[in-house]
Length: 307
Image: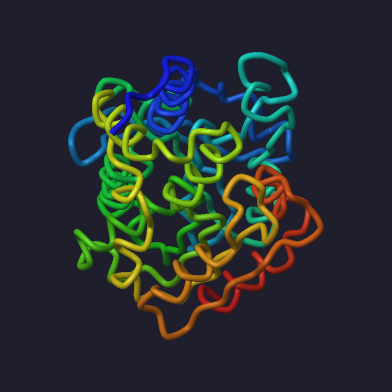
């Protein structure tokens, strides 16, 4: 096998860093009261492996319904600050506002527990700062549910999940590993679960290094991460039996393969499930803003299963 040219190796190393190391933290840049949520408090709890996590409890007066929400890499519970310029704009230059979506949920009568995954937002560092695109972060999903189950007020609430991208992958694995912990959860909404095989193949193709995917895997493992095939939601999708609303951007340039998203959906073990295709954009990050701008489908899904 011919040795990889130095200029190609530099590109592969850059992609490996992008795949498994959040090269910056996205700050928690929007507070709940900036979106009209007046009743809320900061919360602190531990992942199942002891990593300190931070979040919010956004309160809906008189409600016994709770949505546990997480986020993609490299974002935070509030979203993403691409509009602030570098370094965030090196990934994408748009703002993502998750708090807007939470405001819709609170107004519709749902408490929201929104938390930062490890190595993101204001939560603690772990695993050498490496993101497993779910393979480490499932422990955070477990910790969040354990926190709810032992909280004097939250434990009395009916629970739904809002798990995005990396957070969705993590949630699938958490359910796979601890099915009994999530047995009483009513439903799961999972925007844009991410197949790293599809995403990194698309990136490698754009950068002209698609023939070196095996070296990309090696570089990711060297950093303390996983091979791309080990960071795919299909590995744990069959264990998900909850009612599911999944969404994907159909013409997402970052994955360039709608069939892969369809495969994830088809492999879900749920008997009641829907795949919603977001149309009219090629930008993956537009998909993260979709339900903040168009909350009707999100609210209807949770209303069906929690009210």
